[in-house]
Length: 272
Length: 262
Image 1: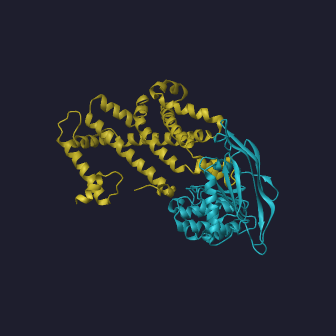
Image 2: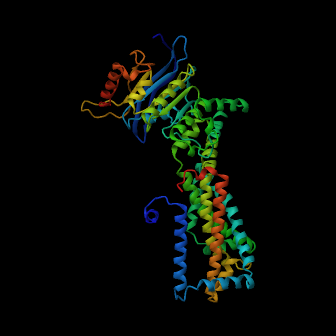
Image 3: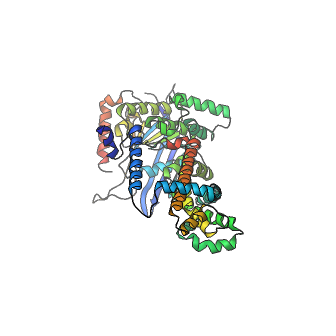
């Protein structure tokens, strides 16, 4: 499989976070490079895993520009500018939408930030609605939609105003097997829609996340000689799934090496 | 039949419309039977109340007094809504937070105790009554609105910020537009409070009439049938206006009832 990893498009640079004298994150470092595959558009999907309460959400908020770290910073894009709210699309676990606006209104308010021409904006919104099979729901309110439909609207809303980055918090949470497959397919489709599209998935679902990722970040904390946890989480392990031949495979869950990878990650969780 | 009645006694159960209507009619009938049958000297009979109501309309100009009071209440409510919303929305700015907090604590003060201060500050009976009503409504309105604003979850702010909104736009979208349905609920609740306040305020300054002085006069001469007749009218108008506010909410904010289990 021919590919190359080119310029850095996201860099987490020595990020530390202390809240109320409690060390949450300590010197977190990671980066995402633009993956290039000749003859095709290839985006990036990074799976971000870790035990509950380790600090994933806090790093998620820092990456989104919503929380300022105590030290360090996150740089995004080819120009490596410090992240600011709105540059990264964020799809939270409960898919928040403006309940007082219709689907169209929700998309309109997001598109207004990036497209000033009203006709172009309308065209873009309808393109999004068609892409996510939601045109017939355009005039409905969020309360009238199913969980899956809300998730798609939330994604469309973020895609309309972010810079190629999408952070997704627990996108598989509470979904049945069919829906997990559908969401996985959608994530791959979004990532491959533009060379720089980068999706970071924060999840507890190791299998579903690893199946669509090209990179896995495992967050955890160090332990001392007595096996006590040392405060301050960091990305302790990075798995390059392309190198292992476990990325971009349609029937990946049937490959024995994939199951070995899942077991390897699960074993790591015992000591994080 | 039993299977249709049984759900009426099960928590959170859904019942069909005809069963609910039948249940309400039965409850009203039972209430009326108890009322008619009671030999209480305190509670006049429904017939006595209806007769008193006729007298009040003919001899005491009840319709005009009712209009005077309703207009006072609506006027005070309108002014209080504007003042309260401005104060409540301003609490998103740290500088104004203590002011909102202080005003909300004003609900523990009595209007009777404040009447002298307001008399000195205002000119004439009408402005005195209006200011007392506005004060009485505002302290409750601000309390409810500040509580609503304080309980907006963090993720809603995050959501707005991820859409590149500045903090003013966040406030407009999340606090102002996003909570309009709750503003209507607060209006409904404080309107009920203001309606009960009305007779008290009109009692403080009786020169312009209104339903308050009328009620107090009837009470003074122990015309219990007339007192109950006035109370009945107050209740009816209150329910009607409350229903009106509810209808306005559904009309202007159709999304507000979509998540309610009916």
